Amino acid sequence: MEIETLDRRAILALGGALLAAGAAMPSLAEDKALPTEARGLPPDAPKAAMLVYPKMVPLDLIGPLTIFNLARFDVRLVWKDKTPVVTSNGLSIAATETFDECPADLDVLFVPGGIAGTVACMNDPMVLGFLADRGARAKWVTGVCTGTLVLAAAGLLKGYDATSHWAVADMLPLMGARHVDHRVVRDRNRMTGGGVTAGIDFGLTLVAEIKGEEVARTAQLTVEYAPAPPFANGTPAEAGPERAAAMRRSRKPIDDQARAAAERIGKTLDVPG
Image (cartoon, rainbow, N blue to C red; front, side, top):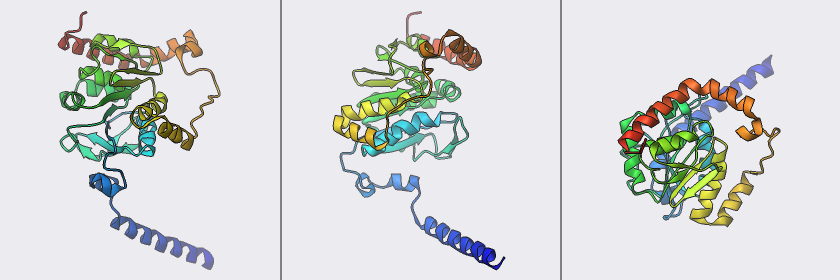
């Protein structure tokens, strides 16, 4: 009992010391506010703004974010404010910069997916206005999964080839994009990826374009990206018509909301009916 008591005291003391040390360390948001060089990044590090929003799918963000960090991009997580947003799986993520704080000129503008949050963003003038403004000047306009619907809603994919999650990809033409059924699609300075896990493929492809293939290869090796899924079930063609139809039925209420938004936005973008 005496040993257990001492252990508990030691643990409590260690915890207090760690908390005190943590209080003296800058938060992620504070660190991101430092000049690029102060964070150990080269002055010419590509500036990437990655949208975070309520009900987004964290993996849509985390996959590309990991690759960008390995390639030494200057990554900024952006939203209306810095209050943590609750994602689709309950994980909270806080923006490091607000829309107003985000640089006007970016190397990369990126939007992740998450259908419930996507629909909300498609119907949010403030979000669409921010994306349209930054996207008009960004060197690369990018997104994965249903996040590409948000890009399209902001008018950033009109006249471009693009892809999205397979269940909603047919909505892209409603907003003027041309759907191409590939895992990663590049058209000029637009690059889009399919559903969720395609974000890693997208991230590696974009890094190769911006910083060279060797940097991308190093990042791929670092994360040991050598996918070998246990089932051939990752696309509708692999899963078969019955499984694909069952998933479409389960998604129908929220996908119908996305379609309604896409049809409404298509009219404002003068997309032929």
